Amino acid sequence: MVQMKHSVNMRPPRGPFTSIVGMESQEDFRLLFRLAKILHRTDRSLPDLQKHAKAGEVMCLPFGLHARGFVELFLNFDMPQMYFFTRGTGPLPEERRELIRRIRQDVDCSAVILRKRAMTNYLHPDAIYEEYRAPVAVADDTDVPVEVAQHVLKRLKFPAWDQLDPQLRTDMAAAMAIELSIKASRRMTAERLAQRDPNGEVAGWLRSIGKFLNR
Image (cartoon, rainbow, N blue to C red):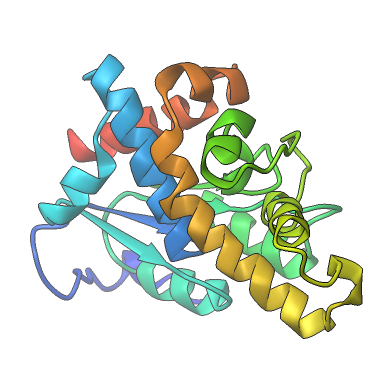
């Protein structure tokens, strides 16, 4: 592939953006915004990412299912970039590994693979229980949206999860992921995040983004 970045000095379409952050979905960003705000209150050196995004200082864009096309386009922009990929379960597909290698070839760009299954795995079980009365034991590999949806269905006396159409289960899990990013995230605190993220993974992401913003 031709490395356009070094032959054509492309710029973002508008605004004073100085860096780009990419995530797989809007709910991923919603959760990261909330966690960043919590951490910013206790450590002012960590950026309030949503505030910087609203100010037009960082471009925060979800790349959804079209990661390759999204990344190949924006890697041409001459600015620092950071992309987040969910780990999921099992090995990453070869296409995804190739894309991550491509991103990491650029000195100004980085690709982060979550150490947990997904962003919802950074939620504390108490935050989930307070919102949904669902006693989910959140571990790094728990499918949190599915577990919460199952508890909600049981409490409402709906048909059991395994009796539902597979596509309906997929849709319900996706809708629950969105709900968790909006509602359960509001129940998070610095103490709860520290319990789910004892190694400070989220703070490390924000510290890297902060370096971009302070250039």
